[in-house]
Image (cartoon, rainbow, N blue to C red; front, side):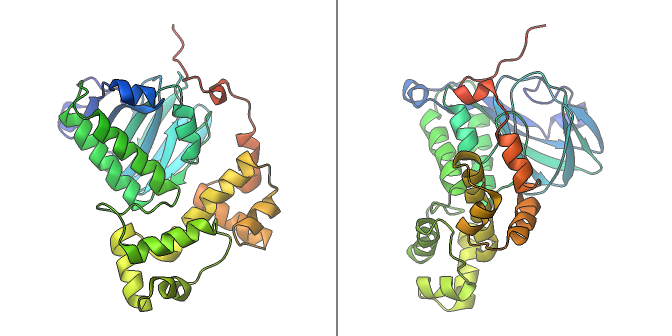
Length: 303
């Protein structure tokens, strides 16, 4: 089996690797960003080199742990962690000490850099990110659809809908694990988003907004969103902080205040725990000039 992402797949693992390619329809192409290909694979203990590729690739670990080596950068990813791999011919490989399952989605189109940035990533290097359970669920749906309709435009609108769902979920819009959030839970999510995560809502505060008993609210939130309410809030706060640091030239202290963390030390500690690097390191990396920021999809150098 020849894979878009993996250089080599042993015969005994080939049956556990699936992938497909998408032929976008005219309306999908007019949107400026679409799914080029997607798939999933299982790796066993070892080192696995990746192919050079043209697109930005969203890589998510579903099960196990991996260490990603990209150029001179080393990134540890555990289950539920993701990163974007920039297109190009940088040396890239995955090392794992155990059986691991990963999902991946390759994006294409002149506006794909905007999608990458909207999903909190850097354009020129991988950055560890946490994924909401709804995003993993939607990614699984994307892989299933694209494998079933590989090489055709038969599911082009369905794939675009799923991609937009992933972006919406990342930005705290009410996307549930199955379809849409219930009115009670959506009301809380909308309130958090409208407040831009500046206030520190407690579990009791959120339960009061939903007009449900606290334990009932917590169970309903986990069932619909896929994670506890306070974990969800922290995820959204850090995504908002990345936007403030990268796009609005906020200082570390200002960004912390804007997401309800007055103590810069506490904010920096939480940011590094979630994002993998400190806020100041993130600002430094986000300011690195890159031709991809102009909206041009990176191309693999011809040898």
